[in-house]
Length: 253
Image (cartoon, rainbow, N blue to C red):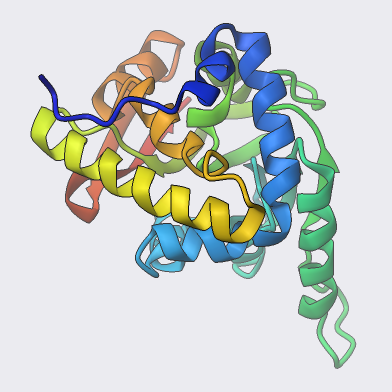
């Protein structure tokens, strides 16, 4: 017995194949886009922005660098990187997320004209088939992205392809704790809170139960680091966040 709450039966079909997961994730994020910022705050105990600042600190973008933020959502990491002088492209498969990000971008344009305001650009695209030539970016960031791709190895290969030699990948995501007891309590919490939020916001308790369901099937931080190295990154490390319930990976091409 692991103490884990069994995944909701309605979610099982999302994980039967990469194509099924891709379809499910696209529908899900189209549904939750307008509530996305609220949900990340609630499920992170209000610490989401702090974790994202830490991830950007590790990525260390600066003037003259090109940054690609994958699964950019409404643009938090993209805006943080651009505020440090980098040229940033945010990519997401959900068009509504990008609409919301562009609204934020409008708010970020300086009221006093400046020669070159740093505002990210946003494009619709798939992490598993990036619409960019090889070796285009100094840094790739992603927040809650790797866990949601239908084929993790394929997405990692694409990320490595678009990074320049010596480039850096930084990924923030939920972790899958090794301890069965900790994992069970963690996933039970996410299932209960996710179910309540799903019912209140969408009248569907399964909406946010996808998160613990996806964590159950996620390799976990150490194995993701090993996969990054197996797929050609020269060095891959991870740092525990929130006692290991979250993780930030950093890898060099």
